[in-house]
Image (cartoon, rainbow, N blue to C red; front, side, top):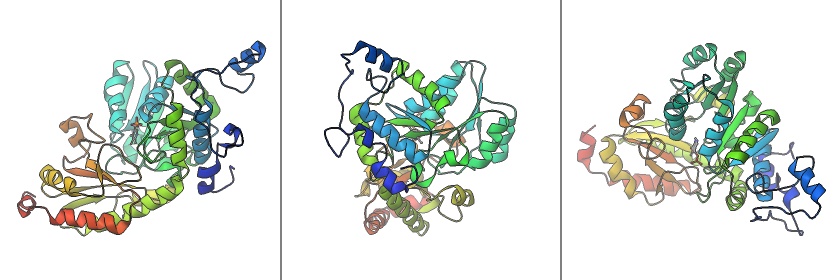
Length: 399
Ligand SMILES: *Cc1c(COP(=O)(O)O)cnc(C)c1O
């Protein structure tokens, strides 16, 4: 399994051990506990001397199949899962950070992650240093001063900035820091951070992994000695992934490679199209040669991803007019779904931030985040074309 190609892994990995009654598909085990007639066997499982399940907050067979699939796709030694992506992030940070510790990260992390950095960690006397995203020298300078964790995200939400993973791993490991990355935007189809030396890889499974916008979940992958600690924190603190959600995410992941390949292709074509539109000021997509992180992205990614963003003339007034005109796009806060999803950055990824905080992060109020779905590309471009054509000219004058 570990030797097979991504597409084959997406379909077959992690399932076999959980199949019962000759079923070809993983069952959804809705059971809070797992009973034992043999009290000695129960004791052996409960103390980890024997494989098995005890209580649903700790482990569950359906959840295990989902975890194994992502573990194998990320090429990791171990994995554990969570009720949401934010639970994966907060539980991982809480496992390793204590009062007096220091963490270095970037300004453009996911909005919720940014809130942890700016609100919750400082309350616990944890020192947080957020560097300009993409400024590798600035990050290195801060890391060199010493830190327990270097936390990265690439590409970032919503302007898809790129950070050089290998270079950051070098800087982090030089000072003995744990290097953690949120790989949600890239997916394991486009990027495997563990191959580049990263210690822990986090996903919001809610997005591309599940891919159908019908289940929340999160995962963290990495070496056994680290994941074991995070699992222990989670099993006690209780942010457990529900078996039904695990099943939906597992089923979604069977088509991960097909979806992501199509989304890569659609996003690239949409970005190229948007460059030709008079209404569009800026297009952000790492697949565009003029994108600031293009060369690094080309080196560390197999595909440039399904996410892009663009700013329009006339700012928020234009956005308000344009987005409701789109027929083939959900105006919603999620991303990575089979359907195209659009929204202003200020109400999607960075709703938790104030306008001043967004401005400091370089996010214009009129920025549109575009998560390419797997629709026929001609329909997506025609849809944008008719929406732009419907805009009143006076908005353009507002610049
Ligand atoms: C959505 C998202 C999260 C949070 O995931 P939830 O499942 O919504 O808790 C974290 N990181 C990134 C990059 C995301 O897009």
